Image (cartoon, rainbow, N blue to C red; front, side):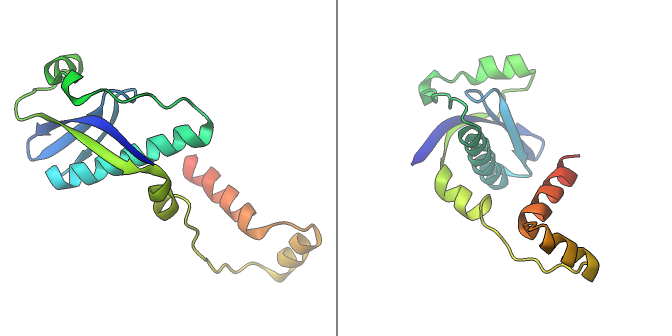
Length: 139
């Protein structure tokens, strides 16, 4: 299902900051307008996927006409010059299948004694490696 939210694009030098006012001021940025839009799609997909996965309520999007660039710029203390609002859309489920949930095969080498001990305890190697990597990445 397609999700569509307004995003505020603020030009800062050559780059752009992107703010989603409906999503707790979710923000990203890009080196240029194209990259900022790509990052906005990725950011929106990731945030909505996380809300869905955690069972949290997904906020309703505002209408484009109801988003005030001036008000948002003032609150964030950002210059509204060269800013614009654009709707950003993504099919979260499809995006997640490609970018978040796709598994890749890795070959690892471990000592023979560790392999034997883990097999005797019926340890799921893939799950254990995934959990260890997630813990390491988050620390």
